[in-house]
View (tube, rainbow, N blue to C red):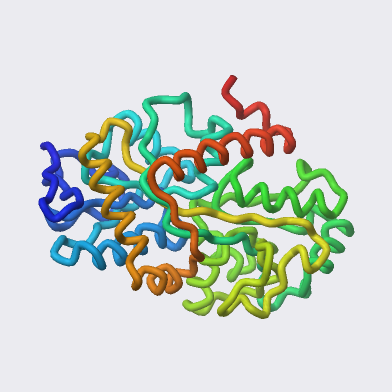
Length: 335
């Protein structure tokens, strides 16, 4: 059933004639007139907060529209959602999907499968920064302690985060091991389907070091997670709850990792719907109340739409291909 485009400016969802995600744990689209934001992971991570920011932010500029519905579709840290959108198995004019810089890193390596019809990049909603954290009872209290532990016995330092080998959180761990002067291929890394599961594993003592992002860690801390931040991966100290956490650079580790978070839609979506989504999101990003919503979810200013976003994506893909080659991940690359 074709989507109906609302006169007030952003796409309405169709009555669900196809499964929104097919995942057993997925929340179903509720109101027939509500647009849908697909969260391509389990609950508790950065993809989730991206959809929540879009939901709350769009209500600023489309007050009379039903709130954006969220649907969970874990699988391959975004790969399943991407392939189903590309193949038109899910989606339509009323569906958007959360993405991050990690999605672009995986896409650059060919980890989302053979190239299909391109998706349409809609907007970057904000930026997150990498965070290195340990259990609050850990003897490790600084990056110097972590590097010393790695040099002493790398096999005893178990890293974990959302994503598999080659994902952005794996890359953070690999670069830390390299900073310690060791081969990153020898490290132990436990993969999780999203940051929420990884943070739960850290709190439970199942991993030793979390290499995720600050925003997802902030949500976990608010829920009482037993973690201690060692470093933020930003150029300068972050404000708010992270103001007392030093950067990795302050501690002698030259590692900065910015994670941009945003939304895309399918390549087969109508040009009219894409234009309406972009217009609504651009209006949202420019609303004076939007920064407060973004801050509430732990993101920092980074807003792009239209050609500037497309240029950013292309440059990011180029940079990530070079990084993958440097980390000897060429086997993932599509020639």
